[in-house]
Image (cartoon, rainbow, N blue to C red; front, side, top):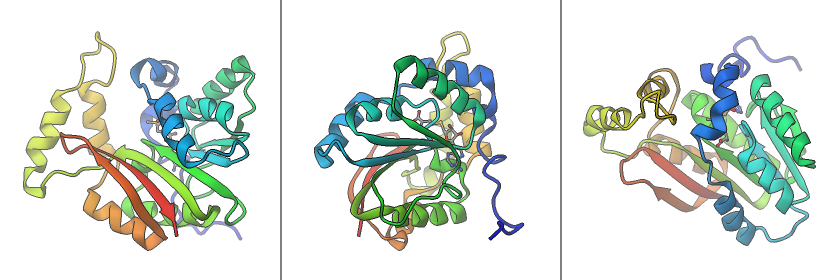
Length: 232
Ligand SMILES: C[S@@+](CC[C@H](N)C(=O)[O-])C[C@H]1O[C@@H](n2cnc3c(N)ncnc32)[C@H](O)[C@@H]1O
C-alpha cells in the first residue's frame, strides 16, 4: 500500500546537519559514541554471536561497525545518503560484514519478532512525539519477545519550571568553532529545530509500545537519558 500523503517524510526531517557533507566528514572527531563500552554492556545481555542486531539512525556507524565484529547479523539503518556514503567507505576500509540500508524508523521493514537487539543512539529526537510513538511500536514489532531496545538520546529530565535556565546552561557548554566539538550554535539548533522531549512524555510511550524499562540512566544536568528496554 502506498504511504498516505500525511505520512512524515523521513528523507526531509532527518536534521539539516546530517545531510551536510562537511559535518558528516568531521562527525567522528566531534562525537565519541562510546561504542566499545556499549558492546561490553550489551554483549553481557546478548552473549550469542548469532544475534540479529539493528542500529537505527546509525549515522557514521561507530556502534554498528564494532557490533558487526561482535555479532554475525548486524544492520545499520539511516535515511541520510550522506551519512551512509561515509559509513560505506568506513565499512569497506574495515572489510566489515555490516549490512547497510537507507531507511528510517518509519519505513525500515523487518519480519515480525526477528530481531534480538535494536540500538538507537541520538537519533529518535529527529521525530516529533506522535512519530516517536509510532517508531517505538514498529521497533517493538520487529523485536522477539524478550528482545532489547537500547535507546540513548537527548531526553530532558529537569523540572518543567527550570526549562529556560537548564537549556540556557546546556547551550553555554558548547565549544567555540576553533575548539572542535559541538558548538553553542549546534546545541541551539538541536533545541530549536529538533524534537527532544521530556522523560515524562517519552517513557509512557515506551510502555504503550510494549516495552518495560529495565534500566534508565540520567545525567546530572537533566539533558541525556539512556535506557535498556525489554520487549514484553
Ligand atoms: C546525531 S546522529 C547519531 C548517529 C549515531 N547513532 C551516533 O550515535 O553517533 C543522528 C542520526 O539520526 C539519523 N536520523 C534522522 N532521522 C531519522 C529517522 N527518521 N530514522 C532513522 N534515523 C534518522 C540521521 O540521519 C543521523 O545519522
